[in-house]
Length: 470
Image (cartoon, rainbow, N blue to C red; front, side):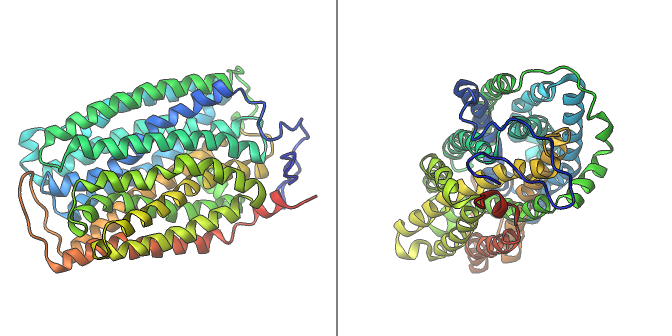
């Protein structure tokens, strides 16, 4: 690929796409529309963060659900997403082929906020029975995830649907990443403050109401941005013949597109790692640093650097390429996770600095994989983007799987260590084995997972063609 123009070469074995005017680096994309589109990520950031950060802790330390059952309550709904997201992707492609837009699904996804509130609004009689409480949370988690998929899948298809090149897609996604970071920061900082130390279900409900309102407002703003960036074109009909059963499309896009397959495999490990860190953060702050309120500080240190470093990562990628920057992020993330093992023994400065390192890397771990997905789609299918939803459905299903696997792995570590669950207001003394599980599950385990992600990502070859001088 010519990095100056953004023109792309086809994958081996695929015909070259028809020549079209190259839009370059996306500098001609209207900035107001781009900003409105990016603002939709603020609400997505809240939903991505809050359940991952607090739901496991809510189950074990407010509702008294044992770690193994709490892990299952979060894992099973996400397992549903493996099938749900590709189905939504297929539906999204059909909508675009028939109507020229994906806006109906986006609008349906704005019903997420009430389901988000219901997730934490566990009725008293249900909360008194841990198994019933776990079932309540799992049921509403399925509903909320379905509504989130209805918004997320067509929303993330937008950069691929746009006529922009290699660096242009990174530019669009960098706007999104900055706003997503704001949403993650709002959710990650406000949620622990509003929920307190998990001493009542009512505090969690207040938290969900506030952040749910925040989410739905920015979802609607994002819809306006998508409408401005991709005006409805009317029914096309030319891609309708390519739409088969959702699972068949998953099999097809994974089989025929090796760069996408490598990227998906790597991101499964990345998503698992980052969501494990989110799930373990409250336990680490409370039991290893002996500062429950420090969750907000560590969460801010984890997320805030992305506001500054995302534009820097974008500029660096123009010189180094996305692949090299992504590998760097993965390596430093593994090192930062190991540094957290020092805990309180070296004071609070070291954990904060290590978390800042994770935050700088987290920005790149979100920016580069998401901006590489459209590269793999365009390289395989050229300018025929009729199956963009199929790709994004697979991608978001991968992210959802990691979002389930991370907390589940941490809950499994807690269960193996003998972590004792507690009801709201109860004080429980944890055993030495539980403390070991809390620490190693938060440090060594994510370091190993991210090292595995780095090994998988090193097999990605598409970026070398894109950045090679011509």
